[in-house]
Length: 173
Image 1 (cartoon, rainbow, N blue to C red):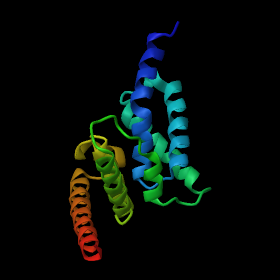
Image 2: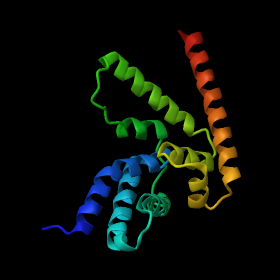
Image 3: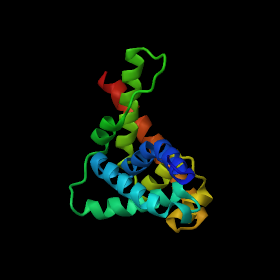
Image 4: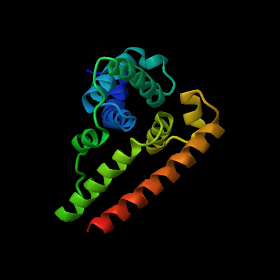
């Protein structure tokens, strides 16, 4: 019979593993490397579960470190193709055409992320995971003002790139 420790970890694992993989992929890691790093970090977290105060943040930092080590041994994958493979359709009431459009737009946004500096990619990944600038600052070891500034620059750059891509589409169509 599983202990309370095991039950809590199992619930955490089920809730967080896909979010953790996404977190790494958004930062530019290949899907396979992200999955491996996430799994290794989860194993390490399991071993230290009772000593970790903030498991969600801890496992993200550990997984990123593992992925960085793994990156030295693999070629960086194209962000768009990686995220296309990572998308899992949600059960909803969208038509197939709407779902295709949503996936295409999501792939395009992820492709645009590749144009951002690495620190802005990291900050966007943490933001999408629901972290606030102060928490991101602690996790990345940079001032909160720097996080807010990078977040603002990333959002502005993404808006600009998105508008440019829409303009190109309308000119091509």
